[in-house]
Length: 136
Image 1: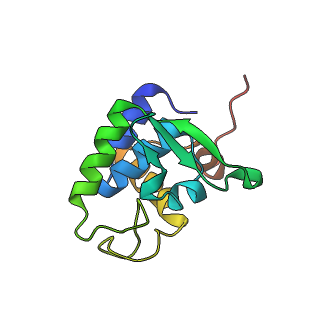
Image 2: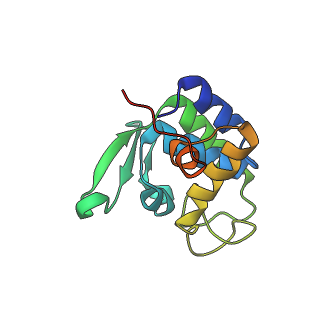
Image 3: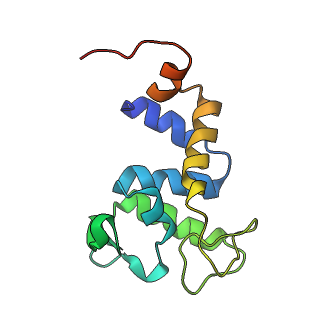
């Protein structure tokens, strides 16, 4: 579990604004990687300030809170996209203009790259490097 300071460092260390938006969405909503990749533009409800998650764990739909900060970030993200997808909030391919969503590995890679840039080691990384896990 990261501290608030480490989360801020991680988000600030994102390689691109696209990755920054991914990291902010993951942190602010708690959605899983696969759920994030399947987010559609129509899932954002700025009037009710919720994001509708379709087909989550156990194929259950649910709503998660949408903070004003994340809404602003998502709007900026949308303005930056070269070609607006009619479906996907995070369209795939190199220039994010694809008709398909990003790959499910993209959120994990965004997090790994940002962590490396921020100098943050996750517990699993520490263990593989030989450090004993902390006992609480």
